[in-house]
Amino acid sequence: MLIAIWVQTIVLALTAYLIWRYTKATEKYTSETAALRAETVRQTKLSVRPIVLPEFPVAGAGSNFRLRNCGEGCALNIQILPVGTIHFNAGELGMGHIESRFEPIDYLPAGETVEVNTSTWANDQKLQNSPFDHWFLPRLTGEETTIEITFGDVEGRRYKLQAIILAEQNIGNLPRKVRLGRIEDINP
Image (cartoon, rainbow, N blue to C red; front, side):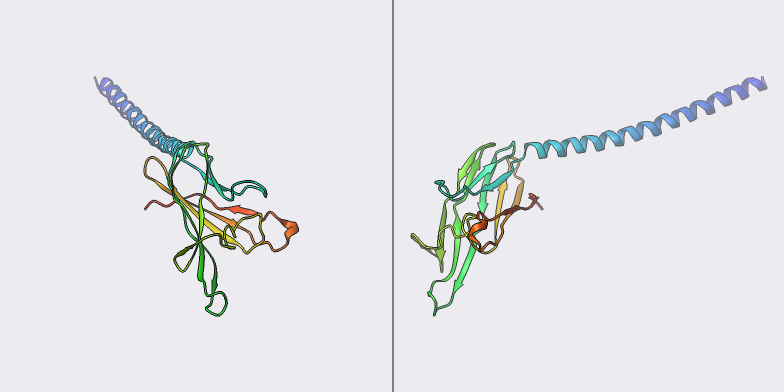
C-alpha cells in the first residue's frame, strides 16, 4: 500500500512537471507568434503604402518637375512645401521675399506620374513669367535647395520625404545631384 502511494505521488509530480513544461513552451510559442504577426502586419503596411518621389527631367523635356508613386498604394493629399529663393531688399529689386509654390495634388495612383504645377510668388503676389520660375531645378546651376513632400495613404497615415538638390555652380557638372532622405511616418 505504501508503495502504491509513493507511485501515485511520483506520477502526480511527473504529471505536474510535464504540465508546467507544456505551459512554458506554449507561452513561448504564443509570444513568438504574436511577434511574428506584428512583423507581418508591419511588412504588409510597408508593402502597400505609397512611395512618392520627385523626378526632374533632363533638358529639353516638356516638364520641369513631376512626382512618381513608386509604391503599391495610392498616395492622397500630396503637398509640397513652398521653397524660398532669395530676399531682395528695397534698394535691389524691391521684390522682397520670393518663393516657389506648388499646387497640391489630390491623389496619385500606384505606378503613376503627375506634373507638378509651380508658380513664383513675391510678397504674397503671384508673378507671371518670372526669371525665378523653376530656379530650383537640377538641370540649372544654383544653391542647395530642399524640397519637402508630404502625402497620405488610404488609411489616413501621413508621410514626409525631403529631397535635397545639391549646390552646383559649374555648368559642366550639370545636372545637379539630388539626395533623397528617408520617408518618415509623421503620425502622432
